[in-house]
Length: 330
Image 1: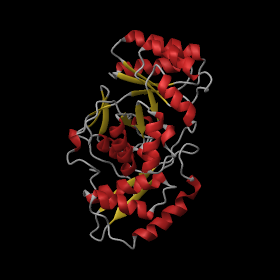
Image 2: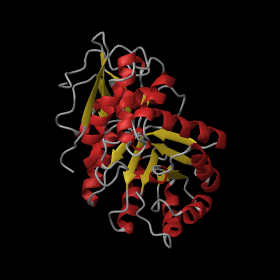
Image 3: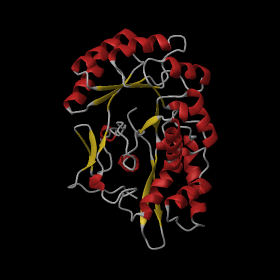
């Protein structure tokens, strides 16, 4: 993946104030039918010209759901951001009044690749001061990945190690692999098997010696009743929540509320958005007292990201007081 296509939305009111949002699906991974997004945005534009801008959180969520089909979760997310930005003066202050107060612990993400590539990334993340390392696994020989994790654990017993299998384990081997991985004091593993295998996932969540985090499993669950049923039946240990995939913060908030009822922990993760989307997700995460490390370190992957006060230092996501926002070009 060498480039990232996104749509930026600009919402303006009759006084000339404006807010910016981001629509950022990924081909073959997002629920959206991406080739239909431009046409859908034109339809939404017509609908929005006939209504007054919402002025409260609840009005925003109600308006977004009324004008955007749930078949386009990334548009719902982008429109939410634009409305929140507009409501708060267009200064990229989505949920908080002082950007400098946002300081969030995040994991250092190590992408899949050959052994040397992964080891180089691990060394880089440790040098940068991350205390929580998340490894994408499933692309290499399993023994090779065990060796990488073994070496990482030797760095420190206090280091938090997360794994993300992206559904790469077969159902007939998953418990055996999880047993081997459990030797290294793993914090959690995301989506060890492919989603939409509820009977198998229920067994994995029950018998795994490593806490299970659901990610892709959550994407296609659209209603509150279905969400609660999934949590009650599978009983995962963690949820990994991505606003772009779930259709915005209202849905993520519902997942968080239901998880709290069931005693399930969670964290929020970006989805390779630009700094526009990343900024909004970080501010949403800061609304909650949550000791888990969030996944908000993807913004530095881009060579042409929008200039912003966002920075990551010593494994902490925060805002630099000396940097202002650059022009989005709208």
